Image 1 (cartoon, rainbow, N blue to C red):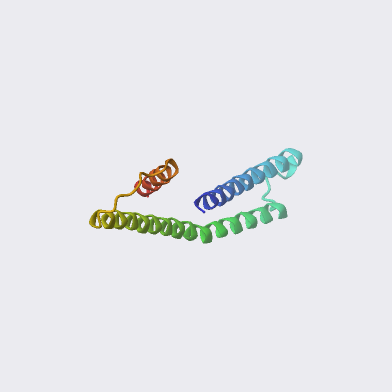
Image 2 (cartoon, rainbow, N blue to C red):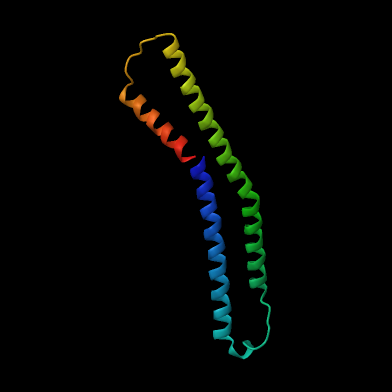
Amino acid sequence: MEAEVDKLELMFQKADSDLDYIQYRLEYEIKRNHPDSAGQKNPVSVLKELSAMKSRYQSLYARFKPVAVEQKETKSRIYATLNKTMTMIEELQKQTDLELSPLTEEEKTVTEQLKSHITDS
């Protein structure tokens, strides 16, 4: 889920950058192709629409940001709960003197991944 959130964030940033570039190119082309109007303040409707689009993207990004924060907090709580559960299981195993078979390679890998996620959070 975090990868999708990061991907959306990058898409918004790229769209914002693309809109800035398009606006710059339009202004440049207007000045180059219509030098007689370069000194005048001539609001071009396309540029107005472009500014409106950029504003909408920024608004969407602002609404999207709290979702990303909440997603990270939820992930952190899940990892904490999993860690707590794993610790409780280990303690119960020690208290009951259960002898368990060694972990498989897959179980070891998953355990290490979980531990690395917990320390990263």
